[in-house]
Image 1: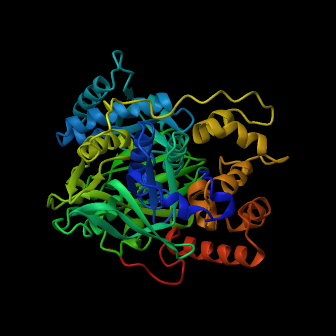
Image 2 (image 1 turned 30 degrees about the horizontal axis):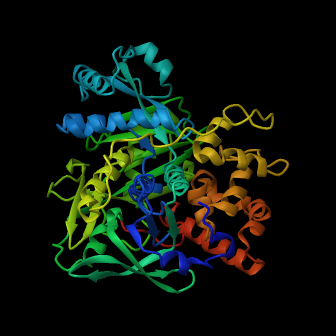
Length: 539
């Protein structure tokens, strides 16, 4: 996102941060971005700070699904499912090209659970919650289902069930929400860490911030401070003296990325894992095939990037061997891995997968913490946070009725350089800025980066306008090249350098240092365990 101080690096930031703010949001994931948007467009002066990069944490490492949580129906979470389904429908309507329908296929095998009858009953409820008066056909006999989902195991297959949810690029969703917030006057700054909470009259009144890039410190005053740091929320809560102990249970979800030619799918395939009955899926995403996810207690250092373990690799491969035995998929087929830590509320369940995915809010000494929840429901979470903050903003009046997530952007004019579907994709990811992005493309830069659906012009635009401070910001979050191409796209770095180095303002020494750091990061956290020369623990 462009800020007025970005062209001069961090120059001018001291004056910007010295302003009094109505709302200080700590955390640059989807929850914080949603709160910034809702606050800014409802007349509040709002500042968001993120200690790393926007979407660095859970919000770039999710399963990329915008869904209602069909499996939560079985656990009796009807309100959460209804809320999620309705938000899914809103995002499909408001964000075409960024949030798109995703069909799922689930094989009906003799003797396996859930049964056909119970699954179809759940889908009937799901359709009703989504407001579908004429539900689509869900069940297909054996031969028809095999045509829809080739390569699956057909042993004891009786037929199959198909239904529709949605998928997204989670990091780009965060960036689009932040861009929308900035259009309404919101301010977002990355690499700005909370050193300590400030207090006045016994309550939190802002924060002391430290710039990770320059080392400078800034005191920020705000009428309300909102802790939207997700899985890291307990750490910031400790700065509110009366806050009780830990309330979160960090759970790790890990994923595999395979080339589409090795696991070709026209739609998602969902299955129950043969070892423990957990749902696992594989679906086409960004020109590759994504497989996930695990659900394990994360005991690692929360300040470090999460990584997949060998046990998780084996677990996900076992699911693939069960569902696609003829393909003989193995570790050599894996292009990349990624792992994220989910902010799940701790209710003491023995099985991590049984923990509820609801969100929760706590007001402690003037610090409002909002955490938990799902990617799909970020707008609901943001509105609930502002409702809880309203007593701290007595002169502010707003009904907090839901508004469309995004204002409809002007249509992109026809451009013969754009491939079919590319205009929709660019508009979904960049909104009203899509035309400027296309106009800024140099000859040949609307061509796709090999192995991805991203064009070179998107890298140039991100380097120029989207607060890229490090090379991994560009290749792991502004674009997803780092998890779509083998070795993080190492062989593409010379072309990336030619397109982006000048835009970033980096000299040759800085570029070489950034490239070395990026490749080391990919080897350690986005590749198979042991790729960097060491073996990761199995738990």
